[in-house]
Length: 425
Ligand code: MG
Image (cartoon, rainbow, N blue to C red; front, top):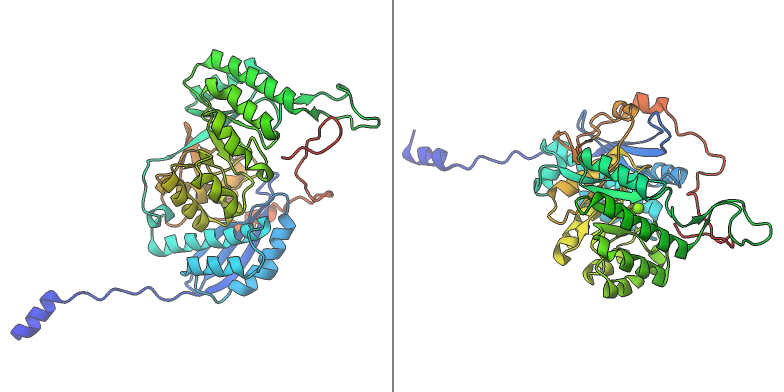
């Protein structure tokens, strides 16, 4: 070999092997009850590479059919033929193509697409999604448990059981949301012809729940990190008084003391007490959470990943939290699904702004319909480390379990006050 050719071969940079360009070949909408009573809607984006597809979720229990129609009629025809590698561009253009934006249904649709695209990207890279987000910064994702008690004694007992099972963070409720603040049917002064159902009273709630927490703390000590969800049942100074009374009890957080319509009150709460505030289960618009985070009025942001548009906005939200010293506490809970849980998991495990994740556990049928569903062991959420999200969907089984019809359109159950008016959930 000539000397020049030899040198060239020694110092030659091997050409990067470009990944073949993909296109989206098909989009499937997969509604299922998963063998339980769920109203889940999954999206499967199928690419031009044989066997390469992604799974997303558009879970919205209260507007299921609106979400299905939006996916079928408005996303699918637009998405087929596009390049699944361009996640950010597809997110931006899908966000704007409806002209009116940031509505809950639009965000569910965006999330389904976005999460499925991240799943595809991870599988294409042969890496879990968290590797593409910067890699793990913790070994597993701590979750908070849900316990309830009819009274303080039962709640304290259940806190101790949860603590013994490995949870360090425990959310304590006293019955349903608003529990502790209801006058039983037939009690209290009601208008003529009033409903015969429990009636919510703000002052009763503030008094009962704060006294209950005093008793729970007296019994369980300050080891367990206690949380409580007000579910927007309070208004104005009652929310501030509630947080002030809880201050000596060192809550880990109090969630949504106010409805999204009353966010300015957080400025007043911040001035009078240090009870940490977790806020935003109902947020769908960035301008709901940007001011609260940037003015350091809240401590944890509680968005549901598939309610704000998926992994792309969730990682941006986590970055914003990191800058301002706020933390993420992505929402899960009863009606949520394993794809949304894993979408949150990949952001959680790769973000320094992570605070806590809400727990969600599923019956055995869900692990069959959605193999790869994450597991919670001793208070920690574990993914399986497989490429992409690490979850699949058994379409045959999913089809076996259709979403049950609802004669009333499956509305969110609303509480009412003594005079019959609705209480914000
Ligand atoms: Mg909540």
